Image 1 (tube, one colour):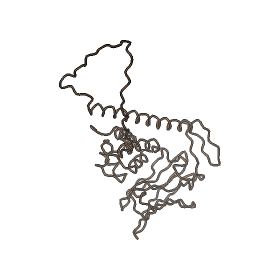
Image 2 (image 1 turned 120 degrees about the vertical axis):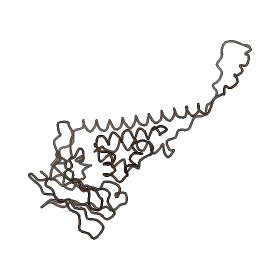
Image 3 (image 1 turned 90 degrees about the vertical axis):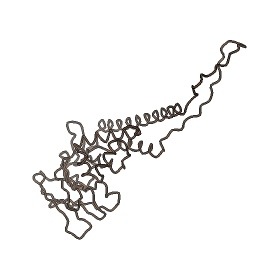
Image 4 (image 1 turned 180 degrees about the vertical axis):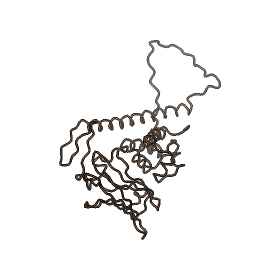
Length: 291
């Protein structure tokens, strides 16, 4: 990582920690994202700034909320684009201070041969110190804001609503339970935190498909990646409204696309997850039972 930008190194350190938390090898990470093994080697090595979609994909695989990592990525992106550069302040000579000695002749001091005055290297060190100071201050502010948000979330009691979950032993709240979750976003309800994977498949077209479950919410959802425009993902349960999402934007192709939540009823629940692709071939469906 010699010669890498410090902003890249800091971001890469966090990304490596996320990969280890997700227990993924480089090959597995490449298989679960839209980026190759060689690209991930560069991203995790801190030599190349990864695209935000790659960073977000790793956050989702590690179940890491994105705001803190987004702040680090923006710092690295600003440094790469030059928007984070700090101009060196002009240096002015300080006024001579009175010494109390009047009319004292001072012989000029000759500079020894071969000794140069201030060099560009010294100016570069000064500029680097200024950059490091600004970067440290911005990073400290981001961390402080993130910690404050988490602390307020833990300390602030949430309003009780029909279907609202009771807190777990750790004090963590989710936004809904079972049928009250149906149709809602997993991220907004916090059901997407530390979920279980009930199904993991690679479809014939090369898209990845998973069905996820959160026991605190007692709700499931499906997600896909490596999709194409026009693909449609559905998750259904007999007697319940089908939850679906369509890939209609190029930004969704290289990211996770997921359905709204489907609340589970008591007992064993049969589920069907289908990916209908843009071609006229039949949809690829997978059946499983949740309980």
